[in-house]
Image 1 (cartoon, rainbow, N blue to C red):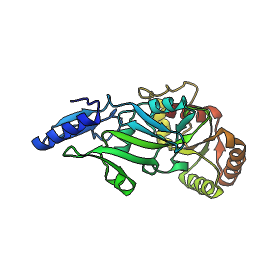
Image 2 (cartoon, one colour; image 1 turned 90 degrees about the horizontal axis):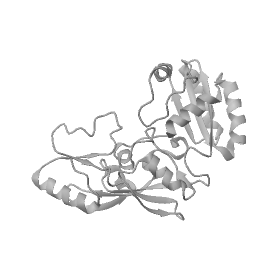
Image 3 (tube, rainbow, N blue to C red; image 1 turned 90 degrees about the vertical axis):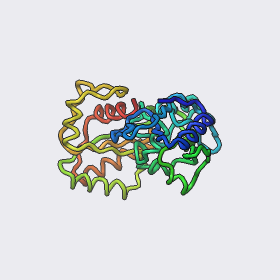
Length: 274
C-alpha cells in the first residue's frame, strides 16, 4: 500500500507500475459494498487519505477544486465557513470521499433537485495508466472510472452554511408500493421545490429498527421506531417551507399517505448528514 501526497507522485507511480505491469487499486474510505478496493489480482493499493485538501474556491462560478481523498463531510464543513454548502452528496456522506463517488457514480441526497453526481462535476484531473496527467470535462468525464488526483464539483450557495442547517423535512407512510408510486407521480407533477426524496421499504424499516447505525453515523434513538410500511422522507429548503408544506398535505390527501411524526424525518436527516 502507498499513500501519495501529490499528483506528481501519482504520475510517477502510475508510470512505474505500468512499465512493470503491476495493477494499481485506488482506495478512498472503502464505504462501497462492492469490493472495488480489494486487490483480487494482486497489485498496489493506492490509499488517497493524504490527498484530502480543498485546493480552491471560485465563489463567482460557484465551484470548488478538491482533492480526491477529501470526505464529503469535511468538504461541506470547509464550505460552511464561506457561507456555502454542497448541491448533493452520497448517503455515505460522513466518511466517503469525493474521488470515490466519481469512480462509483450514481445519485444521492439532493439528486431530486440537482440530478446525478456526474451532472454536477465541472472537471476532473486524472492520472492515466502511463503516468500522463490530464484534465477531462464534458462527455470525457464518462470515461473516468477510477479518479485519482483533483476533482472539481459544483456548489450551491447557502448563507446558512453546513448541510445539516437550513433544511426542513417531512415523512409519510403508505400501505403498499402502488400508493408510493402514485404519491411520487403527484409530487413530480406538482413542481414542488423539493431538494431530496428518500424511500424506506417495510423490510428496510424493520432492519433499521434492529441494527445499530454504522460507525460515523448518528446512533439510532431509542424512541424513534420506524413503522413497517413504505416510508417517504422529503427534504426542502427552509425558505420554501411555506410553499412546500401545503403541497405535500394536498398530495398526501389525494394518495392516502399518512404523515409521520417529525422526529422520524429529523432522525433520518441526522443519520444521513452525520
